[in-house]
Image 1: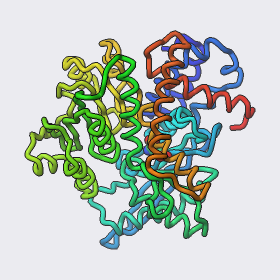
Image 2 (image 1 turned 45 degrees about the vertical axis):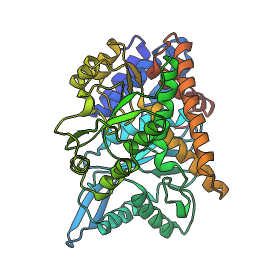
Image 3 (image 1 turned 60 degrees about the vertical axis):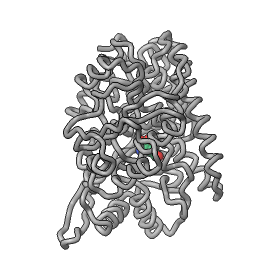
Image 4 (image 1 turned 135 degrees about the horizontal axis):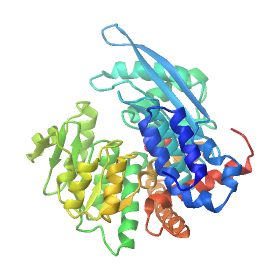
Length: 450
Ligand code: 2IT
């Protein structure tokens, strides 16, 4: 599969060591393919065992999380923290609470996070964590008790200068609050050990919006390269969580129109666009309700709802998947191409299957990869860490300006990195290479540590 014997050997060992972990193997393949010209040009990567070290987490913790539900019944879940790479900073990455969480998903996310965090230019290593706990239908008290139990173990492994978790799917401001309270109680320390905190106890302005805003800033830069403007363009978005919300809000502010959002139940099509404050805020209400049904939007605003379908069959200018991994498969890619879509911007982590990526590429669709596009979320987490260390907080305008600059730089650096290795216009390769270079350099400089 790889032209480089070195990469072929490393990939074979990853396959042997992580049998059946399909998401992790997919994420590794994607990065190694892009790195081929880099490792073939300089033997230092092989000599220093850089790639074989990068594909093995520095540390992976798995633990039992027992808690008592509202009926007095004891429940048991599994918790994880994958501390993937600390070459350029403390481990940093979100926590995901979702029944699909397993070792493969944790590792793919932690691996991706390492390159993403490097791209932001801020000093953050890569990590990820979470649990197979399903928050759907759980009461507030149950969520709190679960978070407290989860943190009671996690606290042993994290710290403001060691590992700084945040939110991801199923973990928002409420959960971060409960986790933070328990950490403080255990340690008797008020530090920036988590990001995505509430405003009243050290959270950064713009953090809730950051992933979506950053994704749209990236998309604007990308469109500019092709002589296009966001104004008047139509967008298909999936999901209706925090990421989709920020994306819809910013597309709207900049003059574009989002016509779809989706849930596990199906998608809605709003021809006029999700464009009023009432509609945009309703996404937050739907999320907070815990129902996880996008049909509620159709019922409220009287727009068409397509049960069991995904929004990729709608004809738009730009597609932005914002829900979860591998949500866009080959059939979806065929729909996207058939609809004449030119720009495909991944916002969720690894939302596209390998087959779908190949099909989109073969049909000349411009693909913007998630580890660059969604880096605005963790970038503002990095800015939250800075503010906590300074015991100071920036205004929304200050944070937004820094986020905007970071996203423009990520786009520019990705473009340049691809060009440097003869792959001009390949934003996937560019992001992987630009993210890799800094981490590899730091690993070599620090010797065989980890
Ligand atoms: O996937 C991600 O980058 C996140 N869930 C955000 C991580 C963070 O530390 O803010």
